[in-house]
Image (cartoon, rainbow, N blue to C red; front, side, top):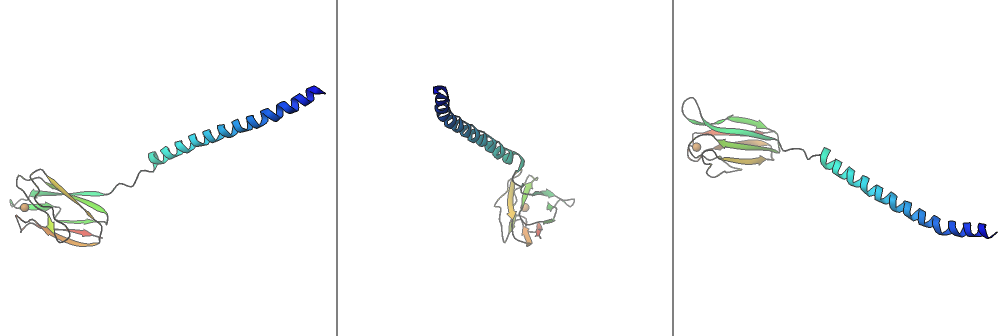
Length: 135
Ligand SMILES: [Cu+2]
């Protein structure tokens, strides 16, 4: 019958088109899902924040400049931020690091990656000694 022949030919043309359409649809859907999961990763898998600890350069009860805390224990990878809360310039000077002048209200930060005890002082007030213990 000619109708059967027509149907076979019709299917022969339409099915591959339909199949291609489904493949396109599936890959578009996949791309959308992939994008969504990539942004989910950004949303939920934030990089671990670097631990930071503040040391305040201050004036102690004897009116001497001091670092608070004077001895600070941290783990490797911690960033130490020194904040100068006095009205005098200071430095944070050690063998492994040096701030240069820290103005009143200013700060200096240093990331400690190596274990050890790091003594430091102020170049303007050498009596002001303190240390960072990394372990
Ligand atoms: Cu000082």
